[in-house]
Amino acid sequence: MRAVVTGGAGFIGSHLVDALLARGDEVVVVDDLSSGRRDWVPAEAVLVEHDIREPYSIEADLVFHLAAQADVGTSMEKPSFDAEVNVVGTVNTLEAARACGAEVVFSSTGGAIYGDVAEPASEATPRRPVSAYGIAKLCAEAYLDGWNRIHGSNHTVLRFANVYGPRQSAALEGGVVSIFMERFQNGEETLVFGDGEQTRDYVFVGDVVRAALAAAGRGGVLNVGTGVETTVNELHRLCAAVAGVAVEPRHVKARPGDARRSVLDSSHAERELGWRPETSLADGLRLTWESIAS
Image (cartoon, rainbow, N blue to C red):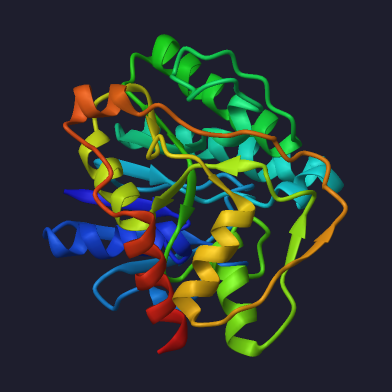
């Protein structure tokens, strides 16, 4: 299979590229390297440096669209830029895929799209984003749905929970696990926004890659998470334990755009794909720490 991975030099994308190559696919990475790293693109893959805000062409059977502006804070400060990457960039990717007859698997977001939830969000839960990032991702989903109706395609939307694991950037606020661990390693102070009792659903990158591979060509919308809530305070404690340090964070003012409670019900993905998360939070944090500390 010929697969294109936008954002394939980044965190999730580079792991997906590794998995595609391992199963024998031809892989092209489309990435502007603004946050991705050239050395995460294996020699067996072709790297095309391109900013998806501009139209482009490809030859592929399947497109995994992971290129994104994924920082909530940036989306609130620069909503136009966020929309250019996450909405216009998605439209350009859909058009590139349409021109060569490829199907798209789109990496969306569960937490940012559903907003605050009273219980684990299913795909039918009302979408009430509380950040510009969530709004842009929801808009991009609408384009996929519309292209499926208008052009008869079978593009797939995956709504990820909070993905973590090796290669995650500590420069982005969404990478809270890597932020904590990198600061522990450097002996630096850790910060928690608000009271730290906000909850998130943390899913390991390896499990996300398996879901993406299983979802190719399926169509529809599927949540990809664990269904387990962890407070930021508890996450800090777990990360500190893995790193072998005993420190408390400093609490600072809560940020705009942060949902209070975010957790996904992924039973639909289990039924449709036979997928379920296999990596516990404890094991995933250990693997992440080993990759940072090595």
